Image (spheres, rainbow, N blue to C red):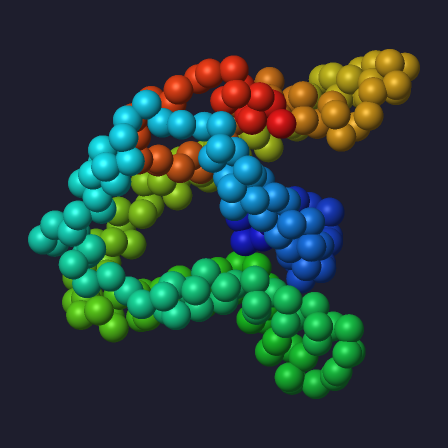
Length: 230
């Protein structure tokens, strides 16, 4: 959901309301995340048993999380600053939608519409993050500039991926392939939702891939596969 690049671009293309999009995404995504995350983990832990002992697993996780000098882990930011930085863009965009429902007039509405725009909200969140997560922890201006500069490489990768996807989509439209797929799906009585999931699995592209800690291999027994399939 916004402010992720792809959903933000979709909101701009379809002229949707960013605040309503975020609200609907929270309504759908929060229960889904709870079911697929802690609830499923609680149920699946009875069947999934790592091959290593719990002591080895804790040691592997602790080794990756040990603070090193200069890494920033020796002086981590507080939880309130992190949550405020993450929630600031969605809150600004939701505030814009709430104000639009109230339909006020005058400079107040113009100011809220300005700060609630997705690009402006992300820019405000960027400056807030530099101050709350950087300068408050003793960063210098040179350190902040270095961190922002180092972030340009992954940002450029995301922009290129999203741009390539948009160009590929336009080529499919220009070649009338999208129309052919639509006609084929209509005659085959395939649900658009199922077709969308199939295309996602076929492409297998994700702009952001998390880096998980290396843990001991799992014991893939019959019970483990039953839990995964469930």
